[in-house]
Length: 294
Image (cartoon, rainbow, N blue to C red):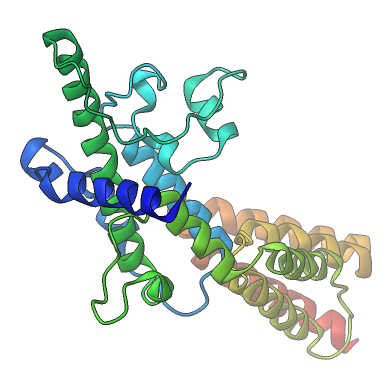
């Protein structure tokens, strides 16, 4: 394509997008209306690819609720989710493992012969294109609000805004590159999780306190990767395994039986898993103290 042809196409895109009526004036709800306020809270600091992927899923779900008029390519129940999600996610949404992710709708071309049939088709395609465009525009703005500063270099210098041609997929892909791969974070999470599972208890003075302090630190480090979270229930199971491996079987059985009685007496209170874990630690620290000092 020559530079003149390219400039002409670009100008047509800009002209079409400058003359359409904003989506919020044409349709009852925007993309933002389909997203919970809690999910729109800005994220600053250590943003990971997992954060971006999670928000991409949230946005795709919101886009799926905007009725698509690109009907020859997109199933009605998929809406405009195809603008941001992967082909696999699109197949799962459509419940069709053979369907292909459709490309974005191109700018409609006005027919030379303006017959009623052709003009009606053109207007329908133009209407669909307008919806798609404003979905792209709004998602880019939502991303800029959700991840402040990470799309800065995509903005027009001096105007501090996007050029109107940036698509939602391009913005998400840019974020993926900006925050890096989740591989390193995944590896760190697994390392800390394994530390929790393999942590040994040493029956020495203050050994129980030392064990719980180390496990709590491992959990904090694992959760800080933002890949996933280690449930407190996992800490309970791993702690009991560690104690069973190091303590006389009769002694540990007595401690476990007494803990079972504590749990039975505190069913309501232990719905708060933090409270349950606190009392669990106090129980084992108290009952293993004598064993450690012997």
